[in-house]
Image (cartoon, rainbow, N blue to C red; front, side, top):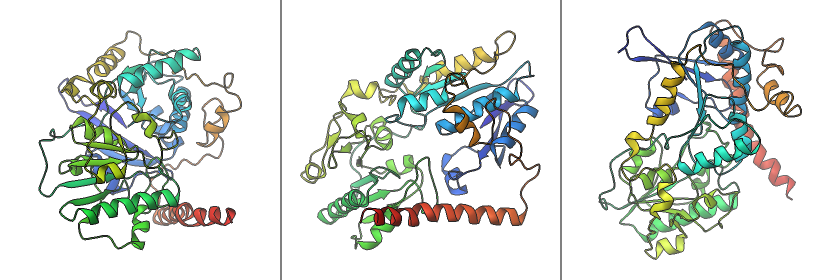
Length: 412
């Protein structure tokens, strides 16, 4: 998304949104959950987006994409702005916990003016990675997790509400996901006086950053859950408003819950493993199993661990973004404007990696659009929209239905 001020020093900034077309393009329902309304919103290809950035003037550009998309856009923007004397401040980062592909994801984001780190721990790790490869680490800027908020927990609700925060790709196997679902349903049966909620990230057919091949919605159809068990969607903050115990494998929802001092559990039933992401919570004091929870155990979080995670449970959240605001203001006022974008990955440093990343977005090694790259000059017509929706539906059907079947056949 990009912001550009309207005329007048006190005017409300204008917010324009560009949705990069692809498998993870958010649906209207997902956009509604964000809670921020854009003045304009359009779905574009990478080449269309870069053309808009070359023709239009903005002060701030936020690249909210997966790592490969960020890297491609940085190179594309460098090319698009090569003849300009002024350019926007470019910001990127992560939405939640960084527990996998640390070096890969970080180096794909290198080149932005600000790389936001959501905690003191992340800021230290980010700088270490950049400095370790000889890259400029000055862009790393410590903030806090960007979606925290809500009233502090003040005690048990009536009824007591237990929420399991599901994740689209953790765990991956049908066996493990079925195990977790069964334990949640069993907890609901053991405690009929409680409300037990399965909080889902997306509905079938929708995508987030990670692909969900075995949605819990489909797995639960094979069970006969009790009346006090429900599936819920929507904003996590609204669900936490009525939560008395938050349970997850490794969801960032655990940090939202800790921010509000809600009792929080990170499950150990499937082991503490990097592939699950719950290794990130070692030292948190929140690790426990379903057997322990069923027996009445409630973990007590380690305050020092919490303070390093960008959770800001001490009330400092309101000032957590001051450093980023100050850096952006300084860059906007920099005499002579900003230098060209300079990502660490170039055709010299990564000749076997970078060209493929750029080509996926129809860009050449220098960031210029490749001949024949899709870039419409007008909104797609009805036929094109129907074809696009059908293609997306086929892709998602392949991911959620066909691919798992093929994998199971391969295991026979």
